[in-house]
Image 1 (cartoon, one colour):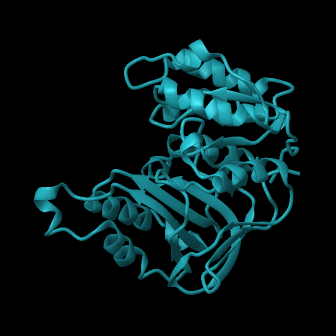
Image 2: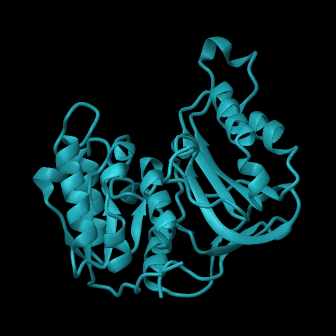
Length: 303
């Protein structure tokens, strides 16, 4: 796994919007956080473009992302927001550009697809806050992102995890948004899952849909290949009020479906769409220890 060069304060970072439309106010607040530490490069008219449920036409978003991947002196690429749209771009991306000029790619939610493609290409990436989420996060979560970008070597990514199935395992960390990740099955963009520690989060999916997604992964052999699972935030994953009393909660669904696995499983990770989103290193070697409730990156995202 290639680990890109580490950043230093003042390093140039490029902002891209390859997915959904970007809300201007949250974007401006997030840029202020980043500009306090880095030299932020952004084409605001392009980033703030809108075409239905996309941040501009496919051709425009693809061109901007391709240019960012090939930009010679950009130290990192950070997504403006998630939403939807990256799956449409994957077949046309030249990931060899990222191999030729490795730099950390940061994103989550719809960014799961881009992080998976980076991992498949052999470059470590960062599952972390997008620009529009940054201003709503704690200073500790903001600092964790900067640490992943700037500090090589082992680091504690998550603590306080709750044990579902005990164990201590090592493997490359792979995952992201459960819904988006499931859409990579059967495509050439799914990373190698043999011995991987999987991590998942989601937003707004009803419990029966979470059940269906997890069952789909199970039927596809995902959990048979993996070494362990870490669950993060599943914000607003509940039934409508009229059916809530008769439906299991999302926590009950996850416990039921994953509590029967033969690999270590932990929940309570502070990452996802909620009030916390601790940056995680994808692709690099990590260790999950359910007894201590920790997830540690053994290599880091940068060198």
